[in-house]
Length: 206
Image (cartoon, rainbow, N blue to C red; front, side):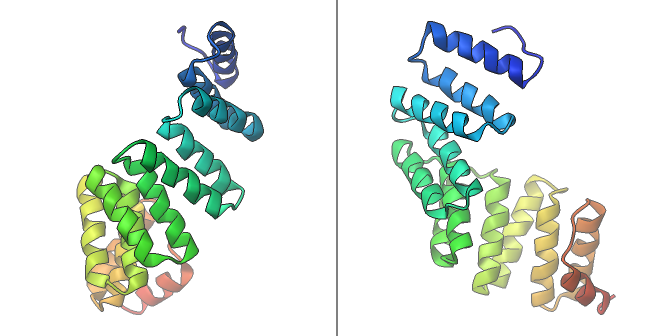
């Protein structure tokens, strides 16, 4: 396919491709992603549904539908679509990562931990899953596990600001104040907006 210069050109190209082959699930999906890029959410949802109608095991399309539900504040819908994604594709780490995130939003910390652990088993480089799992451990009071998980994330990506912020909080909880200050400073250096109450507490331990 010729290189398109912008989203609208991509959309025109995918529409042309679908006119020739309306049963192509990938064209429906690519069109949906392009529509999401210009915030045409209703039309994108229709194209994602069309992609699934053409290819019922299209796990990525279910994840994108889950993302649209999340945007509307429909956590149950998001959970259902991501669960379906993991059923149609075994070991689909992105689906498990999203399930964990939604469970955490719902306050189901144990369920979140189980799903996020699966996400990392299936993709050991899934940075966002490490960060969310570290948060879940923190909420559960498992400070040591939270620290270990954040450090694994930083081993993959040393400039991952969220992990530095999470470590600052975990080390504060663990009364390891020098480490808390160090990671707080690093998070700020990387452009992360550390919560005012954390900054205030950090300042008392400099």
